[in-house]
Every structure is written in structure tokens, then in C-alpha cells.
Length: 232
Image (cartoon, rainbow, N blue to C red; front, side, top):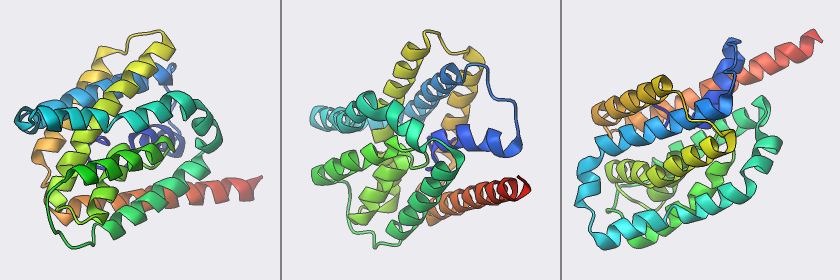
């Protein structure tokens, strides 16, 4: 679901169990790999018509758009997660990115996606290396800031997230040296498929809802951190 609605899957994996005091997965790395792989399959199935409609140049452009984020992830992912992966920084980034995304979505809808928009969105995806930003959210923000129509921006941002999300799943699985469990991956695929097919991707409610949710989670984290600090 978090790969369809731009609320940052990495933030949900870290903040929600912490907020709800759930017992963390024994191997969170493998669990995350399964969710990434499953979500990629679900989104690809939901957007299969869009993928099949791409000509060779557009398909090559889509693949190349994943290179900046993929390269940054290989080089700096672990360092960024160690520095910014705590509840406080993740919540701050979740809220900040949500506010910027909401502001970008207020822009007038002018045109469709052009090659220069893809370049801007590809660079923006590098920012999603920070927990709480979201790959599809960063791409969506860049596209909407450039005046791309909301529906096309939402769909293309999901298409752009596919190579990076699938690559992240493979990299995470390689680092954990284990194959993901089939049940979480299957659930992630089914949820992503249904969400991508059912959501009204031309509606401002998708972005507004995601922004409000981000702010609510961040506020909850802030309250708990403050409460914990006051009780010590």
C-alpha cells in the first residue's frame, strides 16, 4: 500500500511498530525485501497497460531514471539509515516531505510528462534515500512542481518507483542472505494491486490524504518522544 500511496514504506516499517509497541520481525531486512518485491509485482500488474504502452525510447528512459537513486542507494544507504533512521528524524522527514508534496499538488495542471520532467523526478528520487521521504512521493512532488497533470504524475511516479523498489528488494535480500517469506510478499503484492487499481489517481484526495496521514504519524511520534523524555 505504501508503494502506491506516497507515505514512505520505510517510515511505516520503522515507525508503526515502534508507535504500537509491536514485537519487531526477527529478521527485519528479509521482511522488508519481501514487501519491496511483493509491492513491485502488485504495482506492475496494476499498471501493466501503461507498461505495455511504452515504446522503446520511453521504456529506456524509465529504466535510466532509476540509476541516480540506485547508485546513491548502493553507496550511501546504510550510512543514511544509521544517521537518520531514528524515530525523531524519520518523523520529521515524513512530515516535511508530506508538506512539500501537498504544496506541490496545489500547482495548476498544465501538461503531460515530458523527458525533462523525468530527469527532474529521477534526481528527486535520490532524496528518498532518507527514511520518510518516499520514492514515489519524491518523484510525484517533482512532477507536480513542474505542472504535470495530477493523474499522469501519480501514475508515472509509480512507474518510476518500480525499478528502484525491485532493485531495493533484491539488494536487501542479497544483504540478508535469505529469501523473503512468501506470505508477506504475497500480501504486499495483493494490497498494492488492489490499491493501485481502486484509487482515484486523478483525485487530489490521494495526495491530501497521504499528506494528512504523514503529519498525523509524525505528530504521534513527537508526542511519544516527548512523553518518554518527560518520564525519564
